[in-house]
Length: 187
Image (cartoon, rainbow, N blue to C red):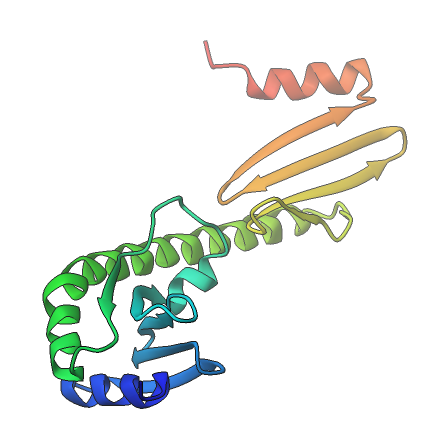
């Protein structure tokens, strides 16, 4: 059998349209790459003559969270001609891969907008003159928990995009009444 990289290069050439081959790990994993979308080409197991072809995108790695959606995958025999493997990729993998890539990109755009809103909210909170701790990112790395102390008052602000959960501990009764009065519905 020709090397996996040689086979992947021949498949990329057959696919055309800007596809190129790239070695990833030794001679058992390569990828077909076009822009930030790619298909991982992996030898199944030593001695087995099948390839596992899996759609992937850089947007998925940036998104930092696995959604539970499996990446589209097909297997093909390694003894097939590169042109036949390329046709199988176009026929069996790329239609679902295209939808998968679009969903990943939409998710990444939503995550970037959410992180931008979180940063803007933090900026608004810190602009009022209360000195908050630097903040802890948790668990998604998009949400932020801030802490501040004003005398005996402990403030915890959990920032989720343009939403803030405030936890006020040690609030004097007169200040609690003033805060709750300000929040009370008019009427």
